[in-house]
Length: 418
Ligand code: ATP
Image (cartoon, rainbow, N blue to C red; front, side, top):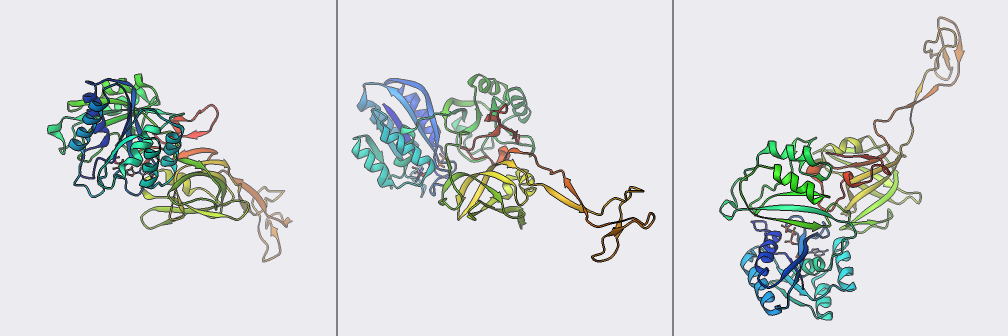
């Protein structure tokens, strides 16, 4: 059985991953969990998300269908925050994962879907499901069940003891920096060096104590063992599409839709402009004159330093979500930097000092040597940027965004923000 759940939490607390963790424990009575549970992030532009648009799925080997459905239903009812205006839980239990369900996952991570589309597939494939209130959670629950992960990472989430929910988390900061030093680059986004922040723990009232992301379960375990914190109630290692760019579509400038995320290639059209609040904008265009506004907002912190140095004519790729016609940058890849030139007065061939203007339209002269020259000298200036990929820092990273630490540094030029 493939079990998917989504939309059980509100801004006030709880967390769908916690519900899944409790449910897996309870279902242990009726069967065996196969492999790792999947923590699936869907379209980051989905309108009704609470935080990170997460949905959960796991596989259970069991022939106790009725008991499994009954336990799952009871657990969803017990752990969902039905009072949340935007909490519309969905529970899906499928016997197999079909091509249609996989296609639905790919659409749910890149497009905006309607509840009816999920319901149509659930009916068509005769999949057992329950939707509560508006039933919007059926979209995420079905997508999580249908998820296939050609690329994947891991996240180990530790959950707090119930008596501590809503209180300040105790995590020893020194141990977190030590865990990062020991295991980076096999783990990432635990801390943000540049902005001097610990980023792996929420500050909200939910049950998550912290989450360690990485590519290697052993390194994640090593980091976990290094961290000193309040006692945890349970911990779960998830298999996830986080950090894979699963939301990014190859696209063309002038051909993008709002609420979708793209990789676009073009030329910087104008000098980046900073507006009040520290937000940065520039336009990108292609050979055909199509244009899109690109934005690096204030929370992207030091990433803006690279963006600010872009100049008209730079050939780049941009990665990010299009909202209200503008692409919110997650990464840029500089393919070719335009030459930046300065025009200088020519050098005197006799004394090697710079000549001075001989008057408007009259060229240049050296007073001492009485030499004259016409044109100015062109000097190519060194740019503050280099070719290659630049990214937002860990404190501003979208869950789905592939961190540069995951790019093959032997093949690609990367400037990781750590
Ligand atoms: P948390 O991260 O705290 O678990 P969340 O950010 O995952 O919360 P949800 O409470 O799960 O937010 O709400 C997201 C809602 O959006 C769910 O009902 C989900 O089914 C729906 N949804 C997910 N992806 C899409 C999509 N591509 N199009 C339309 N709706 C979507």
